[in-house]
Image 1: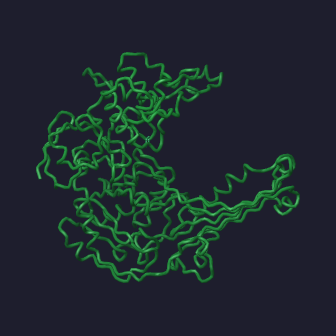
Image 2: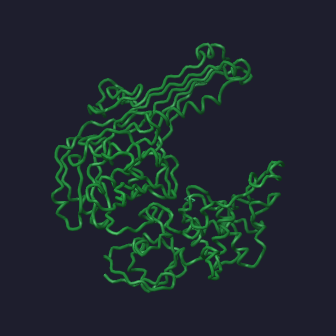
Image 3: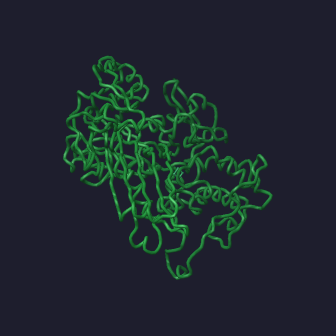
Length: 570
Ligand code: FES
């Protein structure tokens, strides 16, 4: 259908399916300041202003915005230096976000600024509670909210023509953010954050040029403007959209897979199953060579090992066609017993999660026992330490799986460049590992792969996995065309590598005066279907914490520590 959108005061006519969201339409027109965070508008990264009110562009059809005024971050200020052309520069909100250190990854920043702009247009003198409420629909995973709240209060002061230093983070002593009567939330409860964070500078830094002084983030100006700084912020001619068919079963063999109907769908350019690509075993853990973990993954396999495991890749002209194609792939599974509890994994009669002959052990991994990694560390003599203790405390703890929940999902774009290098533009924490690890998987020498890591919208360890770059890369190799693959929020939860759930037993011996005489930890860690960071994450559980809890005196000189761990496949 034909849709006319008035964006930042200028009319844009587009032709798009009726189902096109306003988010897709805006990004398609090059307004990359509006971001994808999830499909339900929960993250708020897709916030724009519709007739001055903040709304989620991903939850609105483009057609619904017809006849309304759409404002994006691109409507606000610009870089203060524009050559001979005079400019007002950045908007006070953009300046305040930069000056207050309110931008970390910057993925949420355009949305927060727009939400704040809407507030200040209605209420030029808001209290902290009102500011918090106004930006509460835009989640920030990196900066938190203190600095953005400060930034909005500071911008409000500037817009009122007042001195903004009363909300400066640099001011000492600690000052209230706002008058006491403003520190009440709308529901009448007191607002928790009453003061700017206390900053204590060591005296010697007074003479330093940089140390101890606030520094503006080098790329803050572009982030405050919502410039195309992130992986998905590119438009390429002929770009295809990738989707992945995922397993509905926890453990199964693929007996038959037929992509004929999917390939026949108009707009589908490629469907890849395990039969179509080389079978190369590797690890997805972005770590130095040799990778401290087993090689137990394939880009595609004839066996699936968790609900959400990969079954087939599709590349199509639009995301909607790619999604439709997934439903046309016929798969017949032979369902196998599953291990859903880490305590079951090492039982002698447990089914083997990894029975493939290509499996490569690392150190003590043992697929026969569903063991991805195994740690046995003894320092001193814990039995002697426990014998010398006046009290012994023992307890068992469970820590759950934790999703990193970066607001920018995993996303990558792949294409061949003019030097016939495969370019992998990806939101990763491990660009060099990605290049080295993917070379054999893709059948290319390392020098024919170029990894570009633009600004990353949060990673928190979740993007230390080389998790999905191979999907787009295989499809670019198959089609010769640029391919973008972006995880949905659901995929982040079912098909990313979250922090391992663990069952941890602790035994600590202490003297009556509190001196620790011995400390023992056993961790049973659940790595799920693949080893990836099995050894290193579980290792850190003990290595980093056990070293902190040693006794004093002789026990500090010769501590008694035991750290054992088994990391199992489930
Ligand atoms: S700075 Fe807010 S999500 Fe990263």
